[in-house]
Amino acid sequence: MSGIGRASVLIGAGTIVSRLTGFLRGIVLVAVVGAVGSRAGDAFTTANQLPNNIYAIISTGLLTAVIVPQIVKAASHQDGGRAFISKVFTLGTVVLLVAAVLATLAAPWLVRLYAPGYAPDQLALATTFAYWCLPQIVFYGLYALVGEALNARRIYGPFTWAPIVNNIVSIAGFLLFLALFGGPVTEVVDWTQTMIVLLAGTATFGIVVQAVILFFFWRRTGLHVRPDFRWRGVGLGQIGRLAGWTFLMVVAGQLAGLLQSRVVSEASGAGPAAAVSANAWLLFMLPYSIIVLSIGTPYFTQLSEHAHAGRDDDVRADIGRSIRTLGVFIVIATFALATAAVPASRIFTNSADDAVDAAWVLLAYLVGLVPLAVLFVIQRTFYAYSDTRTPFFFTLLQCGIVIATAFGARGLVDAGVIGLEYLAAAVAVGQSLSSIVQVVLATWLLHRRLGSLAIGSWMLSLGRFVLAAIPAAAAGWLVFLWFGGPDGWTASSQLLGAVGAAVIGTVSIAVYIGFLALLRAPELSVATGLVRRLLPGRR
Picture (spheres, rainbow, N blue to C red):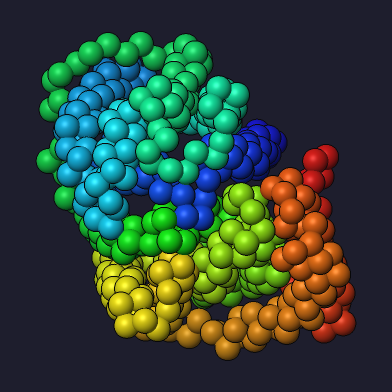
């Protein structure tokens, strides 16, 4: 247990430091390419997201669904898994190389596919960026392959901490860009080939270092890998069975994201677009990754054990307990971040006015944060019962709503109901609406499968949290206004934006705790006990 505890602390600390350095990377990148109205910034964001989108499909369809689980099983082989992992690494590397080459050759088509709203000069810049960024596919894959092999041998640290090195490399390269060329360089016409190579090359080099650094720890696995093209036995014939519905779910999600990108691209140069949406999503995912993933994952482990043992009553209890525990944290995170939306958005923008514009996108995403946390528990309960088919169907509905609302947002712009500067926010509202519908349907389907989920009980708890969060948010908002509001010091610079968001958030949390105590919320003691156990030196 102590080993597991140390590993959890190591992974948790690495995740937090990775997020913080990722924020710093984002701040420096905004200084280079700008944010709201930056056609160059949107071009780079589109190009640099392409390898992530393509890799997501490859990793779920092959690496995650087929190869990675087999790495763990191979440890029981007579040779410790050496022969099998050689086959796996050869196959994985070939797939990644072929995918990267094909994607790079198709760069002009891919950019047009994701950003049809870009002008010809912006498309040309995004395409040039893409030529430098798409080779990242290979190194994302190698990072996953080597990292999972290390994890299978209980060598957890390198896989968790390597992204931090990537962020540091990127920050250094972006700072060099600022030293040489200044910034932000937002106009497409101002970009030279040297500037393009330095920016996009730095982004790719960071991913390369992230992957390569893991090889320095390979000797600790005790495995000797060599090229082996005899792939019989790897499991290629079972891709449909192993990947199955999960793979289709990722494809559906990528298709929905593609259509969102196509719609948002039309706002580039006129207001928040690709770059702002990406940074708003980064802010949105911060509480989700820290709270939901770190706290929810252990609950999922326990829930899975009960499901495998056929103890449905315990599973139902786990569902309510985990939702209430996550809820006490995620509700105040939602309200506090909403209250501090302008200072938080200022971290990734170049002016107070841009921060206000970007804040609308963040607020639109935040509407779906609590439903997304509940969905984490509901969806993984289906997984605990080895059911990936049902989550595919309610995710398919969610993707359909995302697509419909994205086109609906564009229709509002065409009808003159909203301006282009609100298009990205309208698309984000659609994303949140789809999450709400998805979690309602998922909960209903799980209720049909397991019987009573005591929904009223945990909904009552969530309502109590919201009741306490409303005055907490009001207190934070008063602090924001006291500091001068959008024209005050909290929106005057990126650094002060971060400080202001932290102060406003702290005030909101303090008031929230006080009101939960007044309401005698039983979850408060559970939450404080959990925080104490997570602190260094605590058990």
